Image: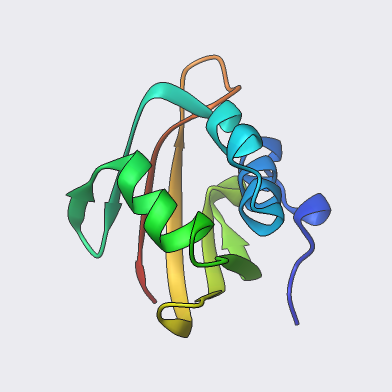
Length: 109
C-alpha cells in the first residue's frame, strides 16, 4: 500500500513526488534550489540530464511505500518506461530556510 503525497510528512518532499508523478517539469524545478545536486546509486549525476532521462522522457512514477527522518527518507516503488519497476530509496536534503531541495539521492533499496 502506498502513501499518498498529501500524507507525506515533509511538504517539500511531497511537492517533489507530486511533480514527478504529474510529469510537471516546471513544478519539479520549482521545488529544487538553482544549484541542486543529486546522486544515483552513489554516483553524482547531472540533475537536468538525469531527471529528463529517468523521470520526464520515460514517464517516471513514485509509489511511496514508507518514510523516515521526518519525511526526508523514502522507500519507493519507482517505475519508468526504460527500467520497469524497482524498489528504490530516496533521501532529501532541504536547503536552509526549508523551502527547496538542495540535494536528493536515490538508489536501489
